[in-house]
Image (cartoon, rainbow over all chains, first blue to last red; front, side, top):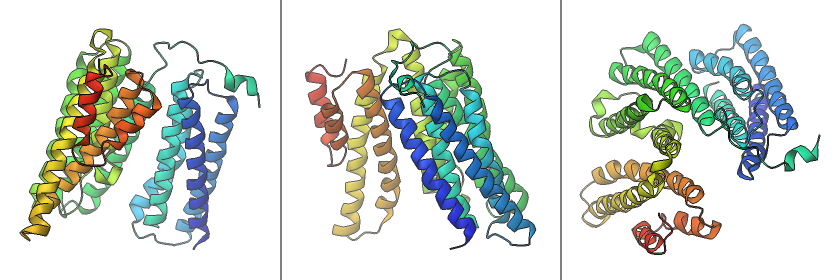
Length: 118
Length: 239
């Protein structure tokens, strides 16, 4: 397993964790705690590391199985979490937890697809 | 970390906060992913499956319009959404059925192929969830969830009938797999829709957890959803 795949699997696991925490809090109908945003930004950090490592490997001449698809996943992966956090800025209602959970699930799906298209 | 912040009761819902926030994010994600997918495929290999790729682009357009529709509906203008979501549902069902019947048009998958199987059937669940949300917006139509549950419970049993007929022809009569190929994905879609609608009904009708689990379990053996619906209606749990 390559180092890139390993980062992707760590991202997937952590994204699922974020989704579970957010989903559970939404189910209990809580306000969004500030540390959940920190968890989401941690996820974004991991995704940025994965994107930089992925772009580096592309620039060094490594060719993924499905190059254009893989590149789009790489770029899209770093946009989702900021987009979601931006859309619930200043709103800590229970539904905003659902937004974070959906964003984390999307990120998990994308990083699995990244492994498949590498 | 402030433990107090976690246990605070939720604030009353404002017009800004609500289920539409989740819908908007999902519509935005699907607009981007379907659009990017369609454009890449049309630019790099349009000859391979022109119909499928064009339908993907159409799906992306539908999601963009759906996003606008949900946004307008969350501000109180529900007219556009009440048409657009039905158009979207019809689109998913039409393309999904075409992809099963006219396989020549789909050498490669489209976004709505097999009712969106590549996306975990979210494409077919999404307009249903949107329509349920739209109904909840309108207090006079709160019975919408009960009606939706009864329709989907019936459809679930019907799709079981189709699948069992297909299995009968495949295994007993040995007349080929055609029936299973057609009814398998249909049953899968209706089954997932039933699960979603059940969860919504559970919240709207204030069922206990036990009743909710019973409703979910009823989808596993054939035709039990009808029995559950009958019992729920008689015991006043679907009003």
